[in-house]
Length: 331
Image (cartoon, rainbow, N blue to C red; front, side):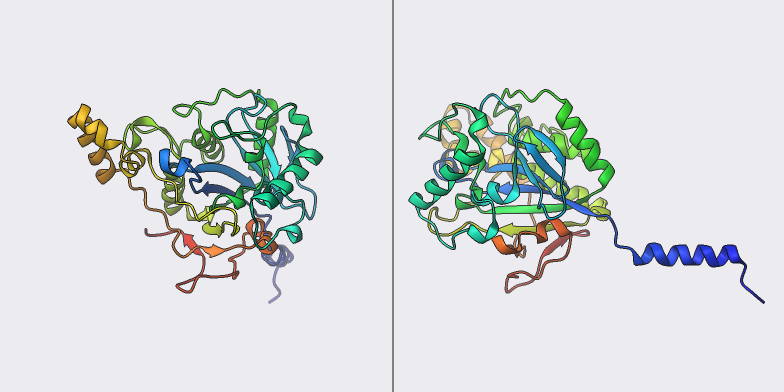
């Protein structure tokens, strides 16, 4: 008995679909260590977002990437030309150079300054008269060369073309004017808003932990929890290590209440108001630790940074205790 033609066509279509590669691309939440004096005074760290399918048409406009481009990092910083967010290609954002082959194996302060200044003069002059960072106020140099100052963990998740196209249109249409506030409009609030665009309603401000303050570690933990319920986003944790020589290794960003305890601020608070100090300690012990699966994260090098965009399970510089930490089920 012959098989009906319609059935043959259906089977053939199914095999063709199975044989074709999926149109997948990646986003990643970049959780960055606290660095320099900030690691002592307020060890919350920093946060930005990476997208493999999205590139920078300019510092303030987004577009779809062309073949061979590695994607964009979008971040919110304070006091940079009045903008709410700025977009940089991923290699310059991490290393202040245009090609990964130009990244030094080891750097000192003079080398970092030279690389940053060279990139600024070639690509960041459109920001206008924005100063370089000083002892207190941060400047344009915080936009580039992040891996010279901070270890970075990338919490990589999958996105769809439709999501990325809608996100590009949304960001390009919105007013990009900054009113940075550490309490209500910081870098973690920015990340939370963007993740809510991709995963509606998943991220919100909590009374506990952290008394309503949104912190980078808290957002990363919320993404991990979301991934456990939604394994289809294939969350994978990767490490972009600190380039040696310029800074000593920093510390993973803390929650707000842990920051108060680690910095010792809870002690004078305890003298002034023992109940408030008790509430801070209780908040930390009950809700505020936010464990993250970073111990066995695979390590990326400048030359292997394309793996961040592919969605593959990397086999790049794995730690002796295991490979990449993929988050799908269990803690």
